[in-house]
Each structure stands twice: as C-alpha cells, then as structure tokens.
Length: 75
Image 1 (tube, helix red, strand yellow):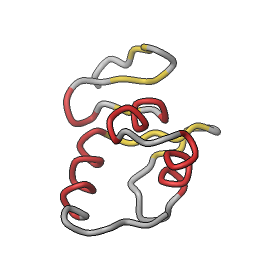
Image 2 (cartoon, rainbow, N blue to C red):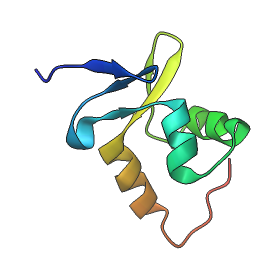
Image 3 (cartoon, rainbow, N blue to C red):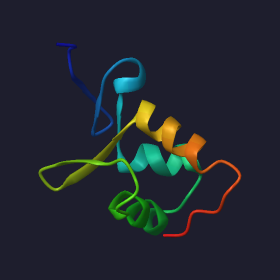
Image 4 (cartoon, rainbow, N blue to C red):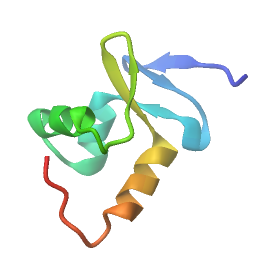
C-alpha cells in the first residue's frame, strides 16, 4: 500500500490516487467555497467521504471533467 502523508490539512498520495481536499478543489476549478461544497455533495460527483470530510481522487476528477467537457453542469 502506498504511504499516506498529510499536507496542508489534506491527505495526499502520488499520481491519480492522490486525494484532493475541499480547498484543492476550489483552487483547481477556480470556484468559491459554496460551489465547492455543493459540488462535493452532488450525487453525480465522484467523492469519497471519510468521517465528516469529503475528498475526490485526482484521477476521478479528471475523468469527471472529461465526461462533462463541452456541457454545463449545474449544482
């Protein structure tokens, strides 16, 4: 199993299995806190919930973005 380390309050791994945090999602997608929260709670968004925190794997986010490329996603 790959080692897990904490960085800036989130859990990270290497490559596509890297777990992105709420803050990472805001930064990557250039969205505000409310929109990030809505997105993470959306049933069609690939989230992982650990305790009371939401994460998304980098690879899953990239696949999700490809799926919605050229379309509008409303939350």
